[in-house]
Length: 363
Figure 1 (cartoon, rainbow, N blue to C red):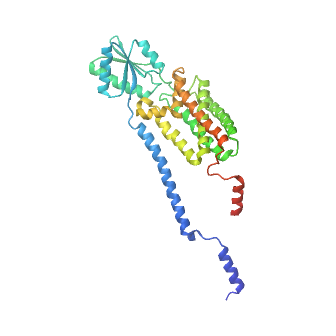
Figure 2 (spheres, helix red, strand yellow; figure 1 turned 60 degrees about the horizontal axis):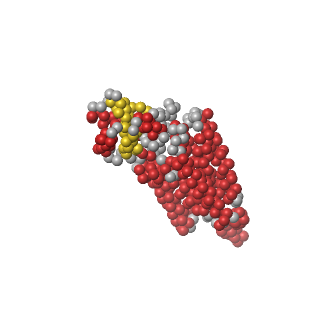
């Protein structure tokens, strides 16, 4: 028989001992199970955004309203336009140009992508793989079939080829993604974890310094170290710094005003939507037109266009992409300034004393 003291000690031990995992309250198990299901559904939705955006934009590439020049009489231009519409309805938007020199200049100025010029003993097709290798190759096939059907020889001239070390034009994509993704992460972490009690205007200063550093490193590796995008280091640095600042400041502002939900929205907008809508190596005229128009207004599409035109087209048609980057940077900056004016509470965050009190209570 056990003594009363032993029974009391045993009872005290039973009362004070932590409950085994198997004896968790049913309500706690239900909450944990529901939380797991909610997380699974949330991640599935995020995955769906990636699938719909990338596959929806890139699954059926083909020319769509490609700006195209034809040198010749109005009747010849109309005949070429009609033949292209029959071969690929809505694929090419044909405009009459006065000369081969004007066509070449328009391609380099980024006004058009393709040009057809009458030439001795046949026709001359002008393309630029630096604008889009996929568009250039597809246009060569389509115009080649039309020329073959009419018995007219066709020659092709690539007025702006890509460098031999980047034949698919991937370098600009990697450069943009390498700056975009870390900048989004940094902007969120700065205001939610790293320096969440720092004054919002000082947040802007830190983001500006970060943007200069990450762009300088990215440019150094892209140009002199690796030699992937060469010849325009200062342009590359400027575009990279503007992209990094715009990405980080919009992420910081969204996180500051809307917490985790705001950060997720910005990440989804710029990565699966923005990158896919840029057209990547296909170019905006090889994907669904309305989606390409959306991409031109987002950071990845604007930055890729700016880098491409700076590197391969002497900076032509670079103003609009830079204005898009600047507009996002300004919007994020104004949102951070409004924090100073309106003083919204930190979303889903407690003050340090509350954190300490909660930790003490748990102990």
